[in-house]
Image (cartoon, one colour):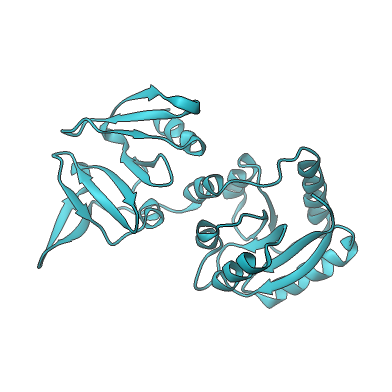
Length: 254
């Protein structure tokens, strides 16, 4: 990739954007700022329109968070996060080979980010997959203590206990809840919503599937390094994993 990198700054705090711009002036030969956005929706539209090489991305923003914006992209630039997350959460960024700048941004830390970027470029591995970014989302989003999911059936609202759910699966515009006794219901959630809402024993195994880890019967090796997750529901369902989600299964099985 030729330098300078065409760069977009996305942050809902103008002060933060101005600070990044000041710090980047020292790297005119590395970064060319071609746009600024103050929320995730503006960032999404700007990225799709301008196709930058790289973005500096805040996480907590109005309209769309940084993660929600990334999940909607059809074009994936290099991502350097600008974050206020604590040191524990930041380990997830490091493990996923995504660089980050902790607010308030220090020049010395930016220097290291630039060095890391140059190494990535030399190794031709700067672009990260959308799957990897979604996997990172799961590591950082808090889980809430819930015990059921409500679904509509005609004029009724049914309450489905989590223990009776085998898996969730996205199909086109809808996400379906599948029970252990082979019933299926349309939910009002996205897979990303459910990832945030469900407790930790529900495991996202691909971009389109979340399984009840307590109902996993076995894992079977599949093609291209993937696995088939066999469940204990009445249909003995088998779902294929996404490679970037294998760590979710590993953490659950430890």
